Structure formats: C-alpha cells, structure tokens
Image 1 (cartoon, rainbow, N blue to C red):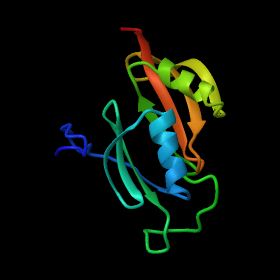
Image 2 (image 1 turned 60 degrees about the vertical axis):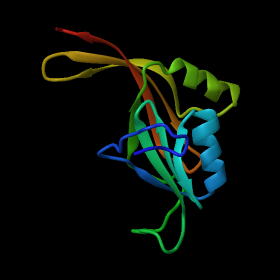
Image 3 (image 1 turned 60 degrees about the horizontal axis):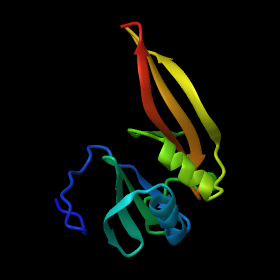
Image 4 (image 1 turned 90 degrees about the vertical axis):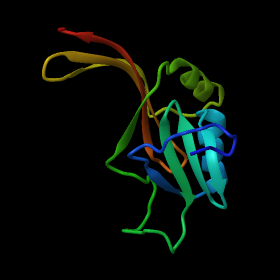
Length: 143
C-alpha cells in the first residue's frame, strides 16, 4: 500500500481506532506535537504512523460502533505502550507545547521469565484522555 505522500507502508496486524470528540484538535496533537505522519485521510478520519506504530482517529458519531456512553477520559482501563527508538525528542516537543504529562520520564524494569527488561518511559493523555505510554529500551539484566 502507498500513503498519500507516495511512501509505501504496511498495515500493522493490530491498529487501534480511537473515537475522538474533536477531530481537528486530536489530529493536531498527534501530528504536530507527537509527530505522527498522515498515511491517508478522508473526512473526519485519519490513518497515522510513527516509527511503524499506527493509529486511526475518527470523529465520534452516533452511527459508529458505540458500546457504551462515552465520558472523559476515554479508553479507561487501557494504556497504549508505544516503543520508539528515542523518546527524548517527543518529550521535548510535549514540554515545548506546555502539554501536561500523566507521569514524567522514569526508568523502569519489568520482570520477564528469564531476564529483567529496562525501559525509559513517560505517560501522556491525548485530548480525549486516552493514555499513551511512550518508551524506549534501555537494557536487559540477567542474560
């Protein structure tokens, strides 16, 4: 498949589609602040990518797949872990935009069956309250 910019891309096997209350505000957040690229767009819908991480955003409507009343914050009970090569440029853009973080940068270690896996991470809520956890790998302990 080819994006609207002519760049080839592949569909990920899992692509969250987020209903948003203000399409233009969310689009600005994801593209101008977070740095996602628009792969393609139609009215009130966009397909985005950043380092092979893909999201779809769609303006809320009464004709969508509504399973319950939608109250802020949306996506309660889920956070999207988004691994990037380097989170520092994104962190700086959020700070420059004076955008509030849900949790500031922190190094954490997660236990796995054979090793502990380290990552640097921070969390931010998008304009509708979806929780995004940006991280980068910082090492493995116990190999």
